[in-house]
Length: 374
Ligand SMILES: *Cc1c(COP(=O)(O)O)cnc(C)c1O
Image 1 (cartoon, rainbow, N blue to C red):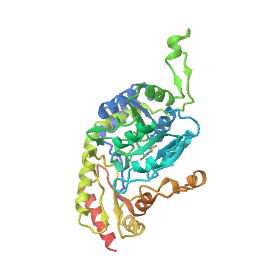
Image 2: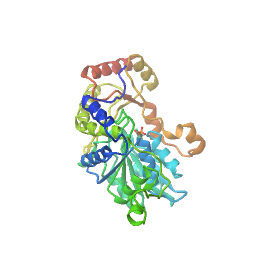
Image 3: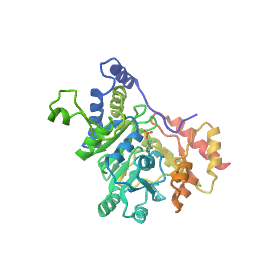
Image 4: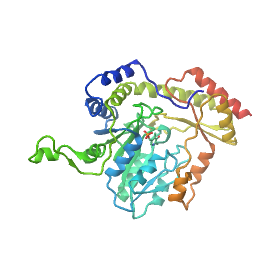
């Protein structure tokens, strides 16, 4: 089976992890800061806080906003569940806005329709690695005084008008799960240009504890610390950070290979009836986390089964969040999301990862073509 995504680990990565395992610090050591600095250097972000998952990163980012009770935040239903779960963890009500048919990113016009006097934030998601229209989202945020979190778990390395993702929103979320661009096994990060958010995020990652104030100002010795927030233990280990540092060095090589395969697919499917290939706006650098196509006039589920039995690890991204039983029970929707519904019915994810060979890609292409003929 050719999987839809997988990690690329080489000897340098393995040696970096082993070095840390043989050192004095396997957690809360120097590799954490070094990994954070490499993320800042790559993205151009001023601050970065690494944690143990992308989901934890979303959780502390929402917590750092300190939104009042009964707040609402507008987000897309066409994403992984943790985007809106992070709002629920923090007792903020997710309000879904429908997506755009071309990029499958949240539709700014739909956001405007969902704004109430309780709306405090927007969480957008750069679907598949194609950045959202950040200029338009920022204008809405400024007009209604909303905070903007960009869930860029698909989009490390992407660019919007020549600016790297990581610097475009109030806070940007990254994931280092094995199917993402660089991996630490499990892991995530929040980048921000705002020092106050950064200080808060660093505390929220580790029990809400502040090691600075008390020891600096109090009469006590080095043992003193304060707990300022109800934080968690979301810390990443140093051997994971070492893997992350080593992986970051190869990020552009990974993305270039992903793009090569995506271009190859685009070309191969350009004259195939019934498939529409992904749209890339001229002002973005796509990070190609996943490669999805829409199947027109075909039964997606039948094509899916056919491809799986041919050894092609296709997937579906995403089941709209409001369809999950937890959401149906706790956050039933009165409104419809026609574009999400239509996209969900016809979308399929084809394998895409840096170590795929051209032969793998050819196998995917010919299997898709023969599945469509049946
Ligand atoms: C992967 C992903 C997450 C969560 O990341 P984890 O590291 O798996 O917790 C959140 N949002 C989106 C859009 C993702 O793709």
